[in-house]
Image (tube, rainbow, N blue to C red; front, side):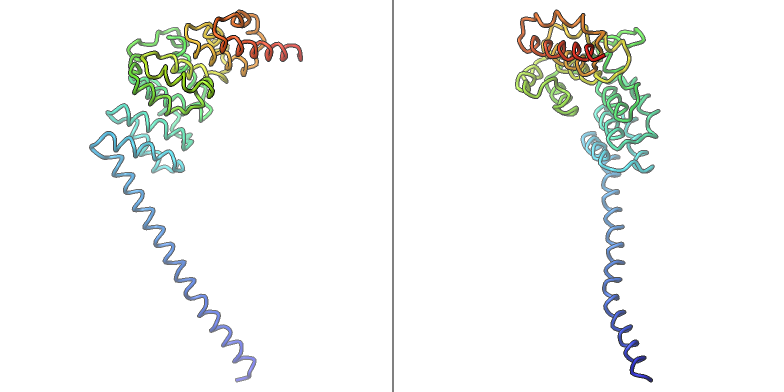
Length: 279
């Protein structure tokens, strides 16, 4: 055998010797990854089917971190049928967080849930999925009636009449849904009472980008609400909408006794007047 041939054989053998452990580790890595996926999914599935509602809620909330694979979406949609409203709420929220477009029909159905927190979670998820149907619930919370003219049941809003539920809702939605981060302490004080103003303020904020003119007029009326928190949220929403047709109805708010309302109104008026001037 020639020296060159022997050299090639030795090099090939050396290369295979070096690749052997790497290939072994790769196979082991795939096996370990598969086992971890099974272990973690089994834990989530078990939590979602627990007899304890708190455990089911925690599992449903965690599903929002996952991609909307069919098996994940099915488990979350099953949560929408749970007997516990807290579980249904988390399921609705997770479907939006994972951007499960296939769940739009199920979320639209959840808008009619007897528990307002479930309906609001479903509405928020529909907005994340760019579905205008989500706006109707927040319009109802702000105005007390649906766009169809039907009244929002009083007992539905009463479901948010305890400080614990108020605080839970506020933090579920995120501080960004409160009218002003700078007023956080004052808002939290309101949350400690039975006043549902922060909830209506959050609804006003969520109606900011609803193209329906009825929402624009509802926001304009809310600029003169009895609670300044709602007023500020509505004023900011009107300003961001950028509709100069609301300008004339906005001016009286600059005379409000509350300075927070006054200055927010002044900024909103200036902004809309500038938009009108540019046209």
